[in-house]
Length: 166
Ligand SMILES: CC(C)(COP(=O)(O)OP(=O)(O)OC[C@H]1O[C@@H](n2cnc3c(N)ncnc32)[C@H](O)[C@@H]1OP(=O)(O)O)[C@@H](O)C(=O)NCCC(=O)NCCS
Image (cartoon, rainbow, N blue to C red; front, side, top):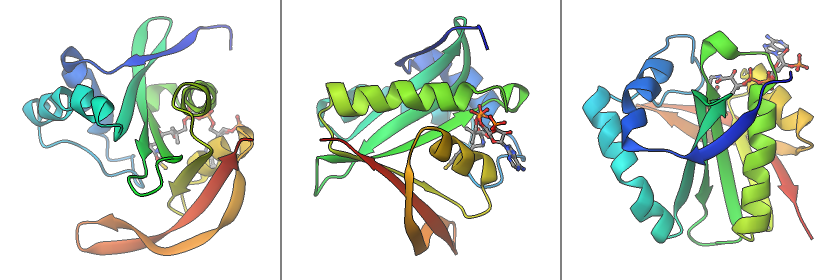
């Protein structure tokens, strides 16, 4: 893919586009759809505070300047040298390598800018494309965490992938 992939901080004016991307029944293993655009705006408004508190660093994924997805690093509040990353891409743009490129950029931010020593990715065991992204980015499978994901009253296992730096 020759197009340019970039990350930038998420902004409140991204709310409509994020809602449009996330409001997708085919996001079977990533249930974070906001109730409506206002709820998404509320989430986005909290981003700068979360960065200041070293809690979460969330980014928009841009393809040639167009917003096509989101990703972020959640800092483990007990072990602040560990971050967990998450990501999503508009279904229209799946399987073009965008998720993989975005995670490589996000990882650089995590290791180089935030000084993390370990980055984790957790995914539902049936989330094959997410697992593929982790593998393509050189993450190592460390095992399966039982009941590590919650969706309402339901709990699912999660594969744990991780990468460490020196
Ligand atoms: C996971 C997600 C971000 C991947 O983004 P993407 O831009 O499509 O990722 P990439 O194109 O870099 O890689 C996807 C890989 O999965 C592969 N893939 C997709 N579905 C597959 C399947 N059913 N079986 C085997 N491989 C599959 C693709 O072929 C591709 O691999 P390749 O490059 O070797 O061909 C995207 O599918 C998504 O947004 N899903 C919904 C949200 C989500 O589940 N996020 C992850 C939460 S842990």
